[in-house]
Length: 492
Image (cartoon, rainbow, N blue to C red; front, side, top):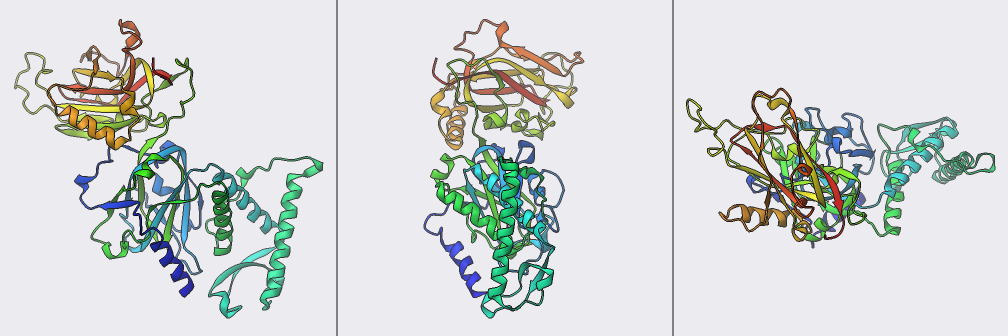
């Protein structure tokens, strides 16, 4: 046991020279809430491997509901519990939120988070799981706990073994038997892959998912992944250290923790996979990773013919900055997210007159939201859905476009700082192009509206944008806004 305690101490101390992130104690100091939660399941994130799913499923940490998160068994053999999350698209991560609500009795003492950028991890896991499943089919094997086979072998090591060999005590013979079993498994897999003398594609998707893995099996998968990452020079990179917080010491006092990525080199790189390590076991309720998706639309001609939703988070669109005097419901970042039907709504205008005799547009709640596109694009039209706000809709919506590729190439925090400073000025330095106000009348029964820029005399240059800004007047809410256009890869 001292050996494994030494391994944990090495894990804790290996990143002491350069701390990848720091905890933010005051929620008001968190500057990454505007960004998308790239770990959300509705963006396509999924668990591709977990060592234990016995008590509460690991996929619960990805969903935004009241389900209790991931809770593991009480670990009795060596090692610790861990899982790997596959992101739908490569992402840059700026901040982490950990939530331990509703699991006070199952909180993990320590955890660490690592990231990597290598899509081959999926194939390695599928292949190793397939081999393990085929190995179990070679003979009638059962799992049992073998205590004190050899004093130096460790306590309570779970091993898979043939029923006819339960009384076997010689470790050398056991090793030979395990090797024979593995050789049989490899031959079985080779036979499946080479039936009738031809190469056959193995359907790894039909792999049986286990609720838990013993140390030896999880170690084999871990070792295969590590070897692959080492060979391709894409090792696991630590985002959150194992000694960041002793969560047991703050149980009952604190349920949510915020961490900002402290290493600038880490916010320049996209990641495809996330590994969460619990030391040694326990649970966590929810994990949110705030950042941006890297747009897949990079290789286009000067003007692409393909129309895309420029506003979609999956295409790289992100809320950079917003200011609103009074938020009633939702959040401005939800209006670009098709899975968030609440969108964004302000409170009613406080200083509205007792009898309305004229427009209230000049006497409105000050609000503006600035979004960056994932690419430089040519905007063709906007679609606006007021959804559930049919009786809470604004009088008009004002939209602005900005084309500044130099700002788009900066990281999100740098962009946020630039727009924050500019919005405080009476005379803006940014050269926003103001589109005609889009007015919504009360007597309209529809909730979905089109605002086609091709119907106006805007030049191609004027419709080219890297950012857009939206304000609602005098108050009210909208459910969704879509920006449809084409992609540019070079300057016009």
